[in-house]
Length: 271
Ligand SMILES: [Zn+2]
Ligand SMILES: [Zn+2]
Image (cartoon, rainbow, N blue to C red; front, side, top):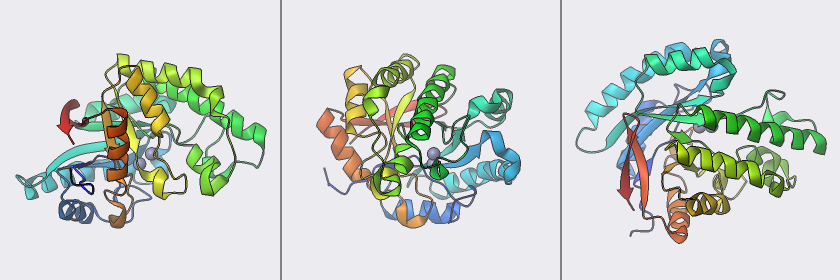
């Protein structure tokens, strides 16, 4: 295996996300230049705040863009229709409506906040608050997994990117969350939901993927074999970033295949 080989990137944002920097066409062009064979844009749908930005317009546009890119790269790069659905349980009827309206190939299930705290990057500097945030995060993630209407559980341990690492610098005793993490992993396995390995933690100061190898190993030990992978790029220069490192980590654990989703059905890709 070529060690810089990047077969997939199934988590990326474009200007169809409020925080995306580059046009979908530019993201696709970069992916193609990198030799990526499976390309899925997953622009944000932050379910509880659809009115804070033109999410509805972006959702409409996203389908047009997908059809255009699919045609443009036909026979050269597989293009899939994706979305990252944040906090679906905060307005479940609305989330269900969105999923009934748009026939995504691939939906990431995400939790970017908790019921008490809207911004993980702006938490008060208090250990009590940090643990309350983590407690709520894992409880809400378990509820998300139990609902289960998505293809892959995105960036497990996401809050650590802001609380620990270079950004927050605070230690979190993760042994407190071992039992609930096991439950989350067992729930997604029982529902045939994949686990995402999100490489952005590596470049964003956490220096490991989300989740890190230890969690992926636990998923593997419980029988989990469905891994999706994405850079969470919000700009052209991050497309495919650190995917080879994540593949090497998977290989060490024992994986030989990763999943890409088309019409919400996984295909296993050897790497
Ligand atoms: Zn996310
Ligand atoms: Zn994302």
